[in-house]
Every structure is written in structure tokens, then in C-alpha cells.
Amino acid sequence: MSGEWLSAFALADWVALAWFFACWTGYGWIVEHGPLGSMRGLLGASHHYRLEWGRQLLRREARVGDAALIGNLMQSVSFYANTTIYVIAGLLALLGTMDKLIDAASDLPFARHVSRDVWEVKLLLLLTVFIVAYFKFTWSLRQFNMLSLLVGAAPPPGEGSEAYAQRFAKINALSGDEFNRGIRAYYFGLAAVFWFVQPWVFAAITTVIVAVLFRRDFRSKTLAAMLP
Image 1 (cartoon, rainbow, N blue to C red):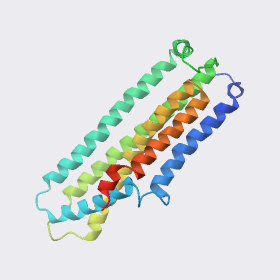
Image 2: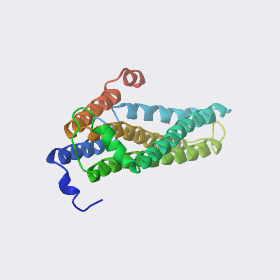
Image 3: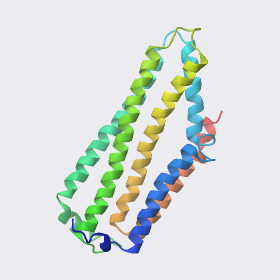
Image 4: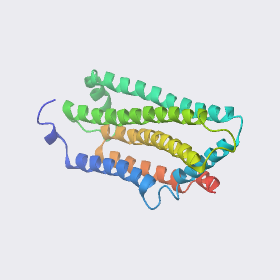
């Protein structure tokens, strides 16, 4: 990659890229820490039920169902982690066939002729997004492993404390949050694909992704059903 690759990007590319990172990080902050976030959105509603799960766990003598539920959650996270590995491998393979990729993309509507360095940077952005997703999924998987330990170490019915239920709910919530961050990276990875087409299309799709995520997190029928 030559040292002149920075000058190869137009102003529209920089604006679209800045908008992409602002939406990705900003939306994550709003969901998890903002005034509309954890208390009013789907994330906050799910945390309420995680705490109730912890309380009910301490009242049950047979906890096979709890272990099965955690196993199901771990299976879902493991599926995404394995899928992400294949996506990353495919993107790395594309780096070795960059010329064919450029030729194929040149026939797309709104596509512009740009240098190989620019295409490599765009592909590296996409690769970075899915690497972030992989780290989120694998960390979520490890935390669900810790959650299974809490189930195994739970005291007998009637001897558990509210603090233990809170601990269970906290680990459960942390695991779920990491999984949600990985899924969110997938959404924004789809937006990053459109940078190969045209920067303003990239920015527009990023905005659409935010709108879709916002509707599902704060305006969906699922949220209405989950609210206590």
C-alpha cells in the first residue's frame, strides 16, 4: 500500500466514514448508557427478566431446565462466532484476489474508478468490523460459561440470597450485552459493504441501519410484549 492512499479518498469518503463510526459507537452508547437506553429499550426489559430468572433459579430444586437454557444461549453465540470465522477467512481471501474484485465492482451502478489502495482500505474496514464481532461473540461465550458455573454452584432452595440472584443476573446481562454488540457489528458490517459502491450510498445505508435498530430496540412489538 503506497503512502499516497490518504489523498486518494474524496471528501465524501471521509464524511461517510466518520458518519459510520459515529453511528456505530453512538448508537451503542445510546442503547447501553443513554437516557433512552437500558431502562426503556429491549435491552433493559431483558435485564429485568434476567434478574427474575436468577430469583426463580434459587427457588427451584431441579435446575436442569436452567442449564438447558444456558446451553441454548451458548449454542446461538457459538454459531455466530463460527460463522464470523468463515466471513473473516473469506475477506482475507479477497485480499489476494483484489484485481478480480475491482473488475467485478466496476460494473455496479454508482461505482467509481478508484485505486487498488482505496479498495484495500475499504476491505480492511469490513474485516475490522467482523473481527470486532468475533471478539464480542467469543467473550460472550466465555461469560455464559461463567454463568453455567453459577448455576452449578447455586445454593439449595431457600438458602440463596438476593445478592446471588443479582450476581447471576449481572453475568447473564454482561453476556447478553456482548452478544448484542456482536450482532450490531454484523448490521454495520452490511452497511460497510456499500462503501465499495459509493460513499453517499454508504452513509445512507448506515442511516437506514440505525433506523432499523432503533425501531427494533425502542418501538417494536417485541418490546411492548416484554415490558413488565
